[in-house]
Image (cartoon, rainbow, N blue to C red; front, side, top):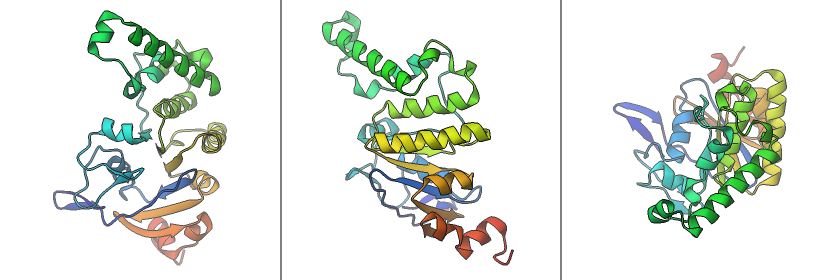
Length: 247
């Protein structure tokens, strides 16, 4: 796929096939086009050329919420939580795609409405308990420590029951202790849930430890891909990050 903004080509001829139950990585210098790729996959942008499919279904012309319904959930480089809603409600509202009642049922408070709301509340509380956030259920996210806000955003994305989980710089701003917890959390999610995890991050130690395969882009073009060791020792990658492969 290719994405252009006017005369600027942000991503050029990008190709990837993600496999289930894998942790894959996407890295590159600042401005390389990494978040643009995630915006394309999640439906925020439509590619200028090329196609995107999720579980075999094309996403052409679909709005982001329709792409989410196909099985794509994401977090963002800058945390995006609803800070005027409780931690519990942040999880519950993310499940809007799984509502099985309509406007009339919600107005009339029918049995279908009550049953669905009870199920969503139960599932949200179960998730908070699984991820050890139940003690913060009634707090506002802005009052949580930064590491827990990152964790909550991941849990909220998981509540959408994705097949592909996109993590955009999940380690940004974390201290070393929170970073170790993030690595443990992502591994546990990969082992527990039936999904693929695709990560962007500038912390190479996190990427090298978590990812089984990594793709590297620079100025919108793929310059390397392979295992962490293959990517780490690729001259093109060294040049992109350090500016001179003789360094």
